[in-house]
Amino acid sequence: MARWMQRVEQALRKTVLKHIDPERTERAMDNALMIGLSRQLTLRREMDITANNIANANTPGFHVESLLLRSEAAHTATSQDGPRDLQYVDAWGIGRDFREGTLEFTGRQLDVALEGDGFFQVEAANGEALYTRDGRFTIDGQGRLAAPDGALVLDDLGAPILIDLAQGPVMISEDGALVQNNAEIARLAVYTFENLGALSKTGSGRYAAPEEAPADLAADFQLRQGYVESSNVQPILELTRMIETMRAYESVSRFISQGEELSRKAIERLGRV
Amino acid sequence: MRSLTTAATGMQAQQMNVEVISNNIANMNTTAFQRQRAEFQDLIYQSVERMGASSSDAGTIVPTGVQVGLGVQAASVYRITEQGSLNQTGNRYDLAISGRGYFRIQLPSGEDAYTRAGNFAISPDGQIVTTDGYTVAPGIAIPQGTRDVAINQQGQVQAIIDGDPDPQIVGQLELSTFFNEAGLEARGDNLFTETAASGAATSGTPGSTGFGVVRQGFVESSNVNAVSEITALIQAQRAYEMNARVISASDEMLAASSNLR
Image 1 (tube, rainbow over the protein chains, first blue to last red):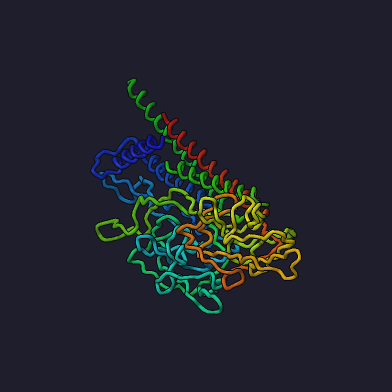
Image 2: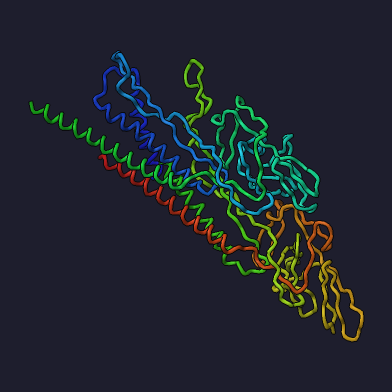
């Protein structure tokens, strides 16, 4: 079933691309069809993204995403003055809403929520530094602070944080200091980025930063121990967006079949002469 | 359409969430049961248009890119090792741990298991055992003719024997702690075994630094909070419904396409 749908998508894409091809000299009769298809492709992508938002409505630290669109001028061979009258729709980028989600009380000692801009730094299995706002930490078998899947949480010097819970409870202060028995044992690092759009998602609530977007130590943040930041997905908005997407898709379909009906009638009438 | 499978991962995750919540509710009255929480993370992302890729030969780059997420996954089912409240029973072999630590239990296979459920009893040969008859380490025998048994907060077991005015010390209970208690493997019957994630057990006397104290005549009740479980159940159910709506909407979109002709 899924493969069948992929094939349909590929076929759709091929036909659209063929008509965007600047080498084509004649103006296709079925421009309306092609423009409709370009809209349907982006609507499908929008649906995928909305589905991901809804699936992650209960994932702490998740940020809502939406598709950004642009119009792509159709290339035609005839030279024109002024704006081109045919505009295809094309996906241009992903917009992420980095607004904070609500803080949810869990009472767990090692749940940390971040208020204000910033990300915790964790070390993935391959040694790469990744960034996350998901502060549900735990302690691994060797006494190091880690994410649930074992990725180590790093301190402000980029080193793992060792905690021995037998020495007493750990207090996490608002500025990131881990305090045990009135002594600071480590400090959680919080980083910010000038251009959040340059981050790419790697799954598990983590972001990878490209080299051209260096991480800076954040100053303006507050940590809340015993809380997690829930996702900032607003289910009502997502559901209405989903219905909008679905109806828009249907109306484009109807528009395409009407266009087809038109050309069928044209052929019939012209053929009669 | 990825949205079909994406919503399916959402439904699977919420189903698992409900399973965990129902196990918590079912064990609301289980001695020393520790509630669990299903933790979710987003799944991998597919890059449709990679950020940082050059978008023209003039050297402009794609600023944000298009990454489409493929849904949600369960990261772990975490056990919340919070102290449950202590209930007085008056039974002299009911022991509750107040603070950190687990009793060590010797399984018939020779392995060690750990438990906080201290509703113990006496075997026919006078040993302190669990309700399943497994010996509580290090193995304490109560002598014959014992009138009463007193167990103090430091885990010292004293027998008061008929005709002897002084209580007799017959053994010393020990507790075990772990770096990461949540990493212990639950094997049912209130028992846990150690894993690489929990780290090795450290034994010690109750009441010493880093160990809890033993209270005789009490049992620890489960730390399940009925109200928060029910609200979590409602949330999970609604999230499940929303994901189902996404599937039917995606289906309608596909139908619209296939009805074109």
